[in-house]
Length: 273
Length: 358
Image (tube, rainbow over all chains, first blue to last red; front, side, top):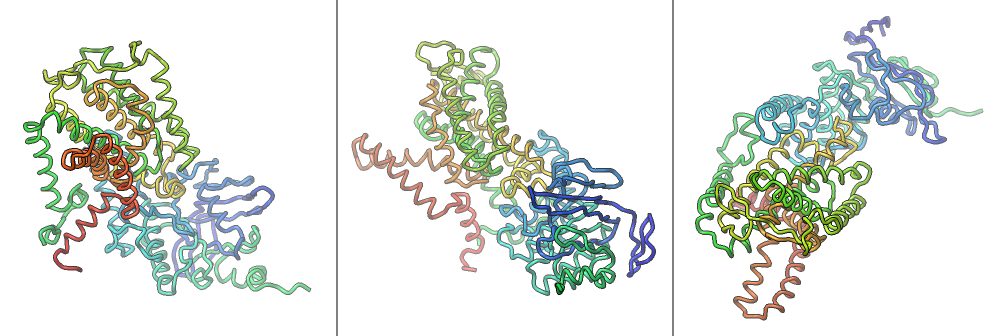
């Protein structure tokens, strides 16, 4: 990594990364007596792809749930765009411009692909009740404008042919892609991806990696992702946080993390003598 | 080959999102409207109005209401009968208190009053789901019937405890009371059913409808994309109760003329409307009409066949009829659990390719 300053840094492949968007300061999350996250601090910068990795049960998904407002940490602060974020409901967090996907797909099975992606734009649709009931004025105009925006995302993710298919009938890999589309439809500042490539074959992983990179590249979206596939993580991300047993054991560029002794120990195991 | 969409290209998102994207469907819809508004009012007689068409239209409104709540927003309700009673008693109080105001306005106001009551009884849905919510709405059903029985103010202290609709007119035609003619009753119900179906379609295709369906399919994911569950669920209760309240008001004022709450709006009504949407198809406006038609027409049809054609005694026919309807409902649910709306869609899919198998 080139010199890290207040305003950002330049990545190995020459992309300019901006200032801090999301800062997590001394986060501790407990479920009863179980400490899921222990005093973790890290930040996510504008325009970067930030990965959170770690063995099973390390607290990665809990971390993502803290960021998306699903869990409220007992200690520590979530600082979004320079301001401490008070405890919020998930739908309020969504309105701040934070979108996410889930580890096990959370699509609306009874609706078509198009309708699912349209739900991603619900926060942009402001037509009043009467206008919607009469389908007159704002409601119809909004519907068409947002449909156009959704169609751009459909083109971008190459799912034109399944737009009207009910989501329940799609194979796993495509569902993952539709879920990404729904998150993208909200035009988020910060996109959280919880294991976007879990359970995929190599080809699907390559497709998904390509989409993640082009989302970051074309829309400038800041992405924070959790992933198990080390090869993918090391290739995609600019900086990596490594967690183990709820603690942060490493933070830095992929090459820094790879040579970190604590990380190697956590992943490969270490002889206790 | 007759029913096809090939060549029917859509060049704008507006065209693509219309209610009947296929040309033949659109024509069929216009044809049905033309017959319903242009021909039936001139040929309808008392028997057809009272036995078939008026109850069909009123139950279709109630079914649409429950379908919005259960089919679209996923909140189970067994309180439909109670909410219909709210509509009926509201319209009764309004009709007797303000005799000079048009009945149409009273029916709409009764819908709004029911919407407010519906929101109140919808509050538990914020904490409980599924069967537990069904039980909570069941409490609403029993409480409301009890209330209208016990508080004489609601039935204007009448000795019988019944409410009786006075004669009210629309465009100088009596639509309620004993003087109302068959075409007038039919037309009033038709106008309400048509307008409300249009309203329901608009609400369910826009952002509010998507919020409801998102809550139905996965409430956690809905919240994470920015749906406020409180507002989504309560708006579903409000809109649903508005429909159900109007249905109750029409059922009492136009169809029954006089009603006793336990008999007309008991738990049986709640189940009847629930069966309608299950048989018709959850989450479908067409299904609401189909289910209402099925459950209104089937008993009439069976009675005519058994008593009229086969010459059975009336009491025997009445019992057999119940058994046949019940058996048909069970068979139906086993064969096609997604209802008539699904059958209709499958038939159309087949027709698109007919006479070719693939």
